[in-house]
Image (cartoon, rainbow, N blue to C red):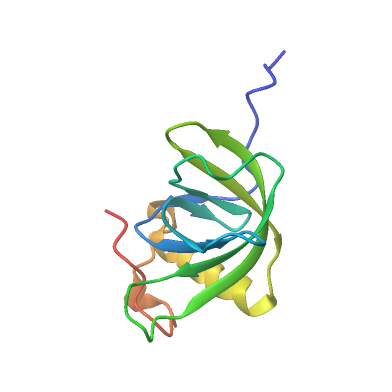
Length: 129
């Protein structure tokens, strides 16, 4: 019998160097490094200000450039690792955001064998190394 901690991921995750603007109602916006990303959510490095079960708005930034596309989403905190970071599961993601995210994850997934130049991306994905 498998332990409760063993389960297959529904979505592929990729390491990234993106940042995310994390917004909680009534709180200042926080800019957090994104450690990894998938179609189901992301893991942000945070200083413990997010709490399990909280809902938030997340805006992924592909780069620091002002013209860099943003990927907005709504999410819920599903795991908090004190001193490390927080896992946020996407609860709302527009079709456009899902499509952009799907392209990014595919381009950054080493198992896909794709290179960014092979994809029809409106931007250059960040280097995940």
